[in-house]
Image 1 (tube, rainbow, N blue to C red):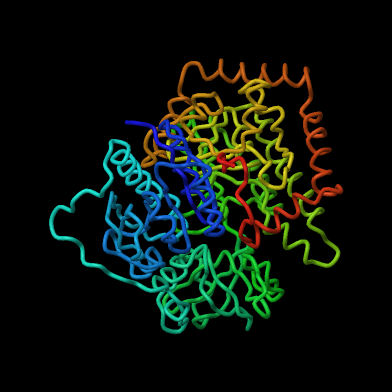
Image 2: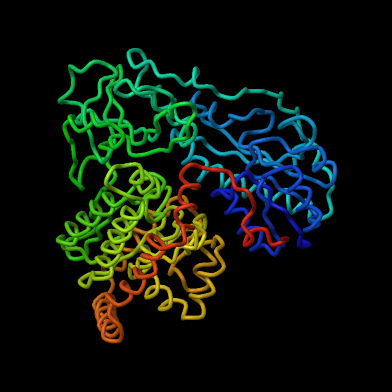
Length: 577
């Protein structure tokens, strides 16, 4: 296959686009990115880069004729052939469809109706739109894009002939709030979940909490046991708080609502936060925490299970935080949970993160919220959050009586990537993308002991090169360079395979030797340079980011939280510039 010059045109450099960018580069293609800022900017990118092919994996408007008439343009549509419209996946989740797909089609003057170059299908989970997009849609998109690009690279300049009867076109309009509106008196929990999941993470479902209009996201089914104390509550009633989420009664059960976004006055932009944190009235609701070890149907952000024989136990601690964001409160709860499970007699501890993200580091939304509170500031909240992350990373580094493994079931970025490296080993599957750097957030220096963790794996030169390039890294490439220790080919069944590998590790004859080597290495490293010294040096730089004269971090955070469109494409992505 001849390598191609491919221009990725996208609304933003989201998780799917990052995966395609990294995979196409790994396949030998020359890839540059241009954000869809204006027609003139796109035309300029074509002139500068002179691509063989334009690939549009994530757009919010149609390609102009001045672009698709100039060179072949392949558009990724998150729906099967024949499906058309801007809310394809939303409608599929709302209607609880069980089979879905993605289509790579050639752009023309008819939206989502160009010639089909490739397609891939998958079973549609009953899950949030964001989760399905990051997992099944991304995997299917990679399959279809690889097929289409290979066909183009082999010399084809037209889509293949369709075999069999062509699927009938099916236009579905933008899914509006009126179709998502929840009737708390009539809707079942399954209907409520489908409505909220179809709108997660944007735009959310328009509703009211304590009389205030807001958009709801991140819904989870409540267990019968969790509702036992509220059997007389009326549908729509707000009942309890757990992990920042609100329990709300439905007609037949209840749901936990994890995230909400207030409707801004006069069109003012707002952002998502933990639902309970937005309303003073939530403090009057009873707290309903749950133990780490509990029934599978009882929702909570933290969970712990144990496996294996008494002499070779494996513990599994998961922390499923929305979008992988770890606020100060979440860090502190996870830290306390870690100390609790370290009292258990296990030989291996698996740190499982969440199903969609391992961790993405400090919570920029909760930090932005602090800027709006009297007596607080974004700088102070950032300082509290990074210290809480550091305390958590230090607790992992100090685990000396068992082996620890970070299991990356989903992507990891910034401080979350280095939190994983604090464990003795890091395992991932081939669908995981890592962003082990900080500079994209306003030239942030970073902490979480990265100046200790990264050089010990890559060496000083390798660490410097990785942090400077600021690009997404595929898990298999991370394995090749020594950043992680294991990469499984298939995402399916990955967690179960990691557990089996950990059980074998706990039973292995060389477990005592591994533990002794770990202890000796930590003592040697501490004698050479204490961890406290790394932390102090990192935080001195972070303090300048948070409190210094250069506002770059605060500006970048504000733009990220409010999802403000880029005015230009970052130069590390737009290599043609």
